[in-house]
Each structure stands twice: as C-alpha cells, then as structure tokens.
Image (tube, rainbow over all chains, first blue to last red; front, side):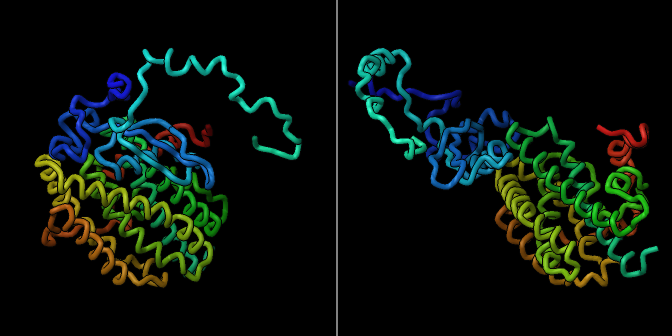
Length: 128
Length: 249
C-alpha cells in the first residue's frame, strides 16, 4: 500500500523538491546564474472554448504562478487555442508508477462489458 | 497634393507607425537570443504585435499620400531623417533589463495615448488604436511585471535595472513634447503625461526603484533628428529592399 501511494515525480524538476511556496525565493533568481534551469517546471492546461474541459497542453519553466500563466499565454495560446489557462507546478502532480502498469490497467482489458457499446444509439443523438 | 491638415495627419500616422516599427524591430533582435525560451517567444510576440500596428498606420498613411505610396515603401525606402519616431525606441536593445524597462516606458505611453485616440474624430485612426489597445494592455502588464521582478529581485538584477533606468530616463521627456504635427490632433498630451508619471511611479515604487532627477534631455527624433543608432538599425531593416528593389517573398 505504501508503495502504491509513493510520490512519483514527474518531469525534469529541479533537485530541490520542495514546493515554490516553501522555498526561499532568493534561491530562484529570475535571470542569470543558471536562468531557467533554476525555475520550476509547470504543467499547462488550456480550455479551448467555454464548456469544454481544460486539457493538458504541455509544460514550461517559470519563476512563479503568475509568470507561468503569462508564459503559457505566449507559448500555447498564440494561435487562438484557448479561453482559459490553468497551471500547476509539476512537482505537485502525483503520477502512477510505470512499473505497476500491469496490475493497474491490464485487469480492465477483458472486461469489455464496461464499455457502453451494447446499445444502439439513435441517429438523433450526436456528440457521443 | 494633400492639404495642410491632411499633411499633419499623415505625419502623425507616420510618427506612430515609426515608433511601433522601430521598437518592434529592436525587440525582434531578441529572437533566438531571449534569456529563456518562454521569454524569447513573449518578446517576439510583442514585436509582431507592434509591427502589425505599424502596418495599420502605414497603410492608412499611404492611402492619404496617394500616388503609388504603400506600407512597404514607407517602411523600407525612407531615410533616417524622414523617420519620426522618438529617440527612446531606437536605442540599442541593451540587456534584458534595458529592453523590458524601455518597453514599460513605451507601453505605458502607448496605453494612455491610445485610450484617447480610440475616441478620435478621425474614424480610421480611432479604429486602429481601438484594435491595438488590447495588445498594448498586455505589453504594459508584461513589462510592468518584469520591471518589478528585476527591481525587487537579486542584487544583480536590481543593479542592472538601476543602470537601465539611469540611461533611459532622459529619453522619456520627448514622449510628451508635442511636435508641430501633433498639436492639432485633439490629444491632451499633458493628461497623458500625468497618467504616465503616476503609473511609472507606481511600478517603480513596487520595484524598489526611484526615478532619477531629470538631467539633460534627449529630444529631436519626432522631427527627424536621430541618433546614429537609427542608421544602424535601418541598414539592417532595409537591407533586402535596398539591395534587391521590389523583392518579394
């Protein structure tokens, strides 16, 4: 059980694995002395239009959340891709462990009855 | 031959177009050299916004000039002495601190200017500036945050932006010295100046910076008296059209 909830770090986050709120901001100089190498990595989620979900768009480096949102605006929405942006520091994402893929996902493979594929959809119902 | 008030409008459009083109070109020099990938993209996005604004001003000016004037000729075939941009925008890009502080000064000016111009009685000018003000609002926000970040950052970032502030400050007064062609455009320049000073002081204060006391002021760009830097810039900007006239992509 303990193994299952082990925190699995995602992406090329810096050595310092404390959250940006906990760390001394002077250790993350905006420029010089290593530049973006010292900035934490952020995951970017973009909502392409109202009513749709935010979808993962990619990641980027930024010194803080505000800069991350602005960077995301410049990097990921310059071709009108979005109406809303979420960012979250990559270190706060807990990911499943790839080696456990067998026990996690394979048991679902032979349970096709979990898919709603045994119904005939009327033609009038769209977007399913 | 355009009459006197049309001539004034043409010069005024050129002046606004030149400001946008020249600072846009200066920012574009960061392309591929930005301090980090994300900011490289941010500054080149801003360049493209500004060059797009320049095109709108030039297209309108060209339609008033008539003959076979067009936006390309206005950008690529005028001499430095014909350019009416203020000196602030032609200075070399310097370091990142210099670039963002210059952008901040200029964007704050553009913001309050466009706020007025979007209600101008000339409908075309009003439409151009109303369309552009959203871009400018973002430029102002982006550059303000960088000024604060660097000013209130590390010892090195602070000392660099202090140096930029010392160098740039004496170029800011030209923004508010109306050239003859600006005087009858129905703009309240002193109103713009008051708001600009307030905004600048606000941001500098948050950035733990203080505006230097005014020293000698550099002016003349709006009347075509430029620094040597504009010649250098135009050599680069106009090289292709001058070497291969009429060349297209």
